[in-house]
Amino acid sequence: MSLASVLDHIDTNLDAALNRLTDLLKIQSISTDPAHKDDCEAAADWLVADLAGIGFQAKKRPTPGHPMVVATSEGAGPHVLFYGHYDVQPVDPLELWDRPPFEPRIEETPTGPVIRARGASDDKGQLMTFVEACRAWKAVHGTLPGPITIFFEGEEESGSPSLVPFMEENAPELTADIALICDTGLFADRVPAIVTQLRGLVGEEITITGPDKDLHSGMFGGIAINPARVLARILADLHDDTGRITLPGFYDGVPPLPDDLRAQWEGLNFDHSAFLGGVGLSAPAGEAGKMPVEMIWSEPTCEINGMWSGYTGAGFKTVLPSKASAKVSFRLVGQQDPDRIRAAFHDFVTARLPEDCTVEFAPHGASPASQMSTDHPAFEQARAALSDEWPDAAAFVGCGGSIPIAGYFKTLLGMDSMLIGFAKDDDQIHSPNEKYDVESFHKGIRSWARILDRLNG
Image (cartoon, rainbow, N blue to C red):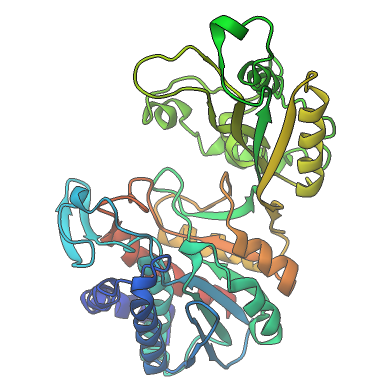
């Protein structure tokens, strides 16, 4: 039987697939809220039953938090692991939803039908594209498409506290030839994309203290050190006039952009004016001489995420503050070492403290960048399969954010990941009125069927 038969089955049974997704979306699996613990259990149970119904050996696996779902199938060919998460973000503020967030429905929009509900795009709709592809394959061929491990997490939206221990304890069971992750999106809402690099992250909160109490700026201004002024100067020193970051050794481990990848990214014709225009901006503000898309995907950053000091309430208070604080984050690429970056930042701040000032540091996580090797044949096979399904040819792209699971698959299980998703920029994930295009869902199912066919060909 041919791939065409599988694709025809997907087309014919799209309504049934949407009904199954609707059933899953009704479950209020908000992982961060203890009140929804039973709902997370229910979502895991639903997935176990659904996967078992199409031939997987599926089990709900306990953790100290919400359960994992692990399902396996046997067969010939490369062994793939597919990862997704069944938990969802909270729905607040509820009053901004046009309808209850766990009462999904198909809604017509100017750009086509969408399914609207919490989790529609992130990540229930995305993970079900793979499940539905496997269902169609089984219906047509009588067997599942080769050796597959499905790994669904229930704590992704609440920091994944159980993930690493579970992966370490079950490494042999979870290790495959390659991991597939469906938690990303299309490029420019139309181009199918395989994310091959993710930036790492270092977060740090600093508090500079000068006088032991807030002071009257008339009595003490001019003679007393002002920690807000000290902090402002230090933060300003983090970049030079070209936008380059000034931490000593910061660029150690930052690789040059390969020529072939540069050419591919240039061919995407990224419209930075439209990208920035959507948030009321116009001009790229990163390091001079870099392509706009390069600034987002393959260059490291240093950003001030918050600053506060003194009196910030209504009206005016002529205070000279005792303390000044800021939150600073660094996005990392290549082989940049998060621990070295943190240490360099501490040294940078401490060296600039004047007499009578002290500093306290509070770390907020650290993870290295992830770089996937496209030498693995699965990458070109997947790119060809996606190009066959979508009007635009698929591209290898970067991602400015951080998706820790891809790094864990590499460091804990020794396997690369392909991040392939079908979300759109306006899906409003984590926001009220989240949606997933029916076309994205439909073509996502067809895309996975094509990829599985190529991998087993």
